[in-house]
Each structure stands twice: as C-alpha cells, then as structure tokens.
Picture 1 (cartoon, rainbow, N blue to C red):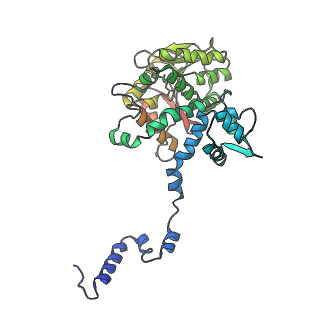
Picture 2 (picture 1 turned 90 degrees about the vertical axis):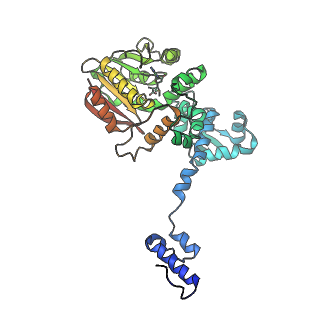
Picture 3 (picture 1 turned 45 degrees about the vertical axis):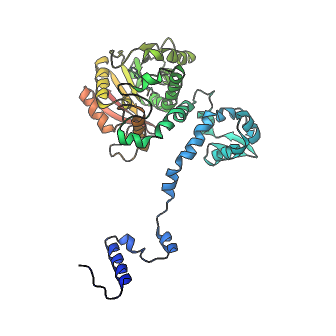
Length: 374
Ligand SMILES: C[S@@+](CC[C@H](N)C(=O)[O-])C[C@H]1O[C@@H](n2cnc3c(N)ncnc32)[C@H](O)[C@@H]1O
C-alpha cells in the first residue's frame, strides 16, 4: 500500500528511495554519501580500462613488426632520428611510438639510443631462425580486421574473414600466393616454441618415423629432426603448400629426411608413420571434421603408433586459459565452424576414435599436447 502524504511528497519519495536500496546492502552504504566518499568506496576501474584500451598497446607492437623495427635495431642501437628515417616515418608520431614501445617493455632506451630487449631481439629480428614475427604480421593484416566485427560474428555465428558459405579459410588464403607464404610463415611463429618443447618432452627415441599432418612451412618437423638425428618423416599438406614447405626444409638442409606428402586430409587417406602430429589442426574445423581427422589418424597409424595433438587447449573448467578461449573466438571470426576445446573434450574424442593410454602435457605458454597410442 502506498504511504499517505503526511510530511510532503519529497520526504515520502526519499523514504521510498531508501526502501529501494534495502534489498541491496552494498548500495545502501552509498545512500546520501558525498561524491568524494562514494568514489573512495568504489572498486578500481583500472582492470576494466586497461583491458578496454588494450588494443592500443597491441597495435603499437603489430605496427612495429610490420615496419620491421626490431630487425632494424638488431645490429646496433640507434638514436630516434636515425631510426625514424630508416623506417621512413613522419616526424609527428615517431618519438611517441618509440617511447611507447619502451614503456610497453618492447624496447630499451639508454643515453638516447633505442635497442631491442633480449626477447624482441631474439624473436622479432627477421634474420634469426627464432623469428616469430610472421604470426604478428598475420595478426596485424588479417586477424585484427576480422576481430573488428566480433559483435557481428557473435550475433550471426558467421565468420568475418570473407570466407563464404561452403568455402574454407584455406581455399581463400591459398588463392593468393603471397598470402599463402605469409600464412605459412605465421604458422612457424605460432608453433616454434611448442615444437622446441615437443622435441624435448616426447620419447622420440622409441620411434623411427613421424609425419606432421598440416605441416605448413615445416617448422615442427625441422625442429624435431634437428633434435633427433635417427628420425625421418616429413610433412603432409595441401599440394599448394609444397613449394613453401620444400623451400623452408631445404634451407635447413633436411630435404632428404623430410619429404613433402601432398594430399587433402578430408579426401585422401593420411600417410603412415610411427608418430603422427596434428598441431593446430583440430581447432580449424567443426566437431564432425574433428572426429573425422582423429579417425583417419587412427587408421593411418601402425599398432603402438602414437598420435600427438597440440593446440591452445582450454582448461576443463573454462576459466584459466584465456589465450585458448580467445583463440576459439578467433576461429569464430575466421572460419565456418572452427572452435578450440578442452582437454576433457579432446580426451573423449580420442578415446572414441580408438586411442588408448591418452595423456595430456603442457608444452609452452598456452599450448599443450595430448598423446594417444593405437
Ligand atoms: C593452422 S595451420 C597449422 C600449421 C602447423 N601444423 C602449425 O602448428 O603451425 C593448418 C594447416 O593445415 C593445412 N590444411 C588445411 N586444410 C587442409 C587439408 N584439407 N588437407 C591437408 N592440409 C590442410 C593448411 O595448409 C595449414 O598448413
């Protein structure tokens, strides 16, 4: 029942206002407090703002990689004006750009000279075999524009990469030879740290042959073959990838031990070897295709053969591996049906395909692997 007006409308209104807050004790303590005290009791907006503005720092790094800034600084530290001229930048933003990279921890500045950090010098100098900038180039050129339309992808469930109905990402990518090379180089950047870990963590001494299914340039087979001289095998990928794979493997002097196996993993049987690797493959595809690929891997392996699956697998509780969850959204904006998955999901799928002695092991950063034995 509405209270009678005994002391004027404003008093009743303020009582009603107070009653409204009674159900929300956290709000009641703010009741009537001056703005300064309200602000003192407020939680910090820092986390929200840092995340919301995060794209600016990210884009500064991506532009620096696009400009090959870290390669330019690899030989010797440079003053700002020399660096600006070498990169052919306008005077207006250059100083802020370089100093933002210092503040972001991507460059050092000492006595007016800019230099790479140990990390950027190792990973972002194009002339080093440890270069992973290809991945950031792909992020800059393709993934970043796709993410611009994330809301649309969330509303429609459709990719924002230009991949049409009934097409897949690779048909589109490989129509442009330069994009195909860029993508393969990006995959090297994405998989090198996992390949180094996999070379150490898997009992390769128990096997003689291995084939990387969907090998791109071949960074993984090259890394494994360099570390384990008794192994031979190679890479399986679409025929269009052959020249890219052979150029990379040839540069590492491994053409004899790592031949290219051309094929389409949805149309052709997979090649056989003691160990097959599916690295960052399953997450590109929908559930039906994931099952199909695992079944094909099982069929191609000999008895006691091993399948290694690696991806940025999501933790079973789906709250810790942020990179895995965000990569899954990258699959939403880029592909028709791709998604990342939890360790438990992958375990179930591998078991359904017939694998036994299934185990999970961390590789590097957000990447981990599943191993199953036929
Ligand atoms: C996301 S990349 C992963 C590359 C590499 N395994 C790694 O971890 O960096 C996917 C790879 O699968 C290959 N691929 C896509 N569709 C394929 C198909 N139908 N048959 C064989 N390979 C395919 C692509 O060419 C590409 O090299």
